[in-house]
Length: 78
Image (tube, rainbow, N blue to C red; front, side, top):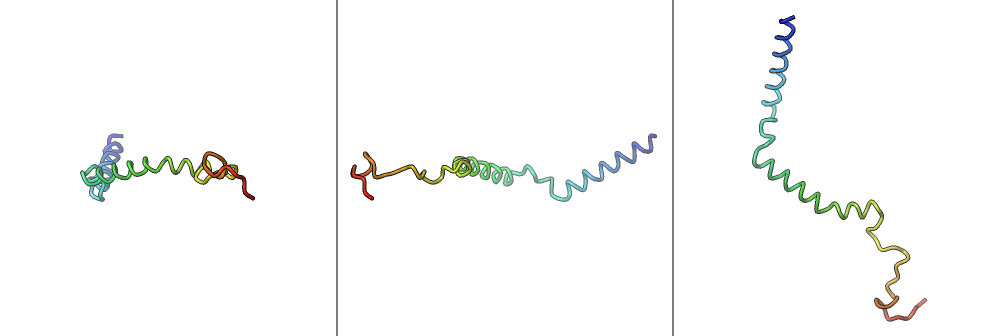
């Protein structure tokens, strides 16, 4: 029973060591944190546009008419 536990622990250590040596060790480096913060900020800035696009509000409605007062001359033209 103890040899099974020992084998399991050794396998787990091997997997952790492999993951660290494969590039997971710099997951929290200053450069990656700066890049992650930039991407999050950019995504938060664009979320309003994305929600408008999803709701179909990115273009004026077909019932919007800019020739009606106070936007236009006040005359209806056909």
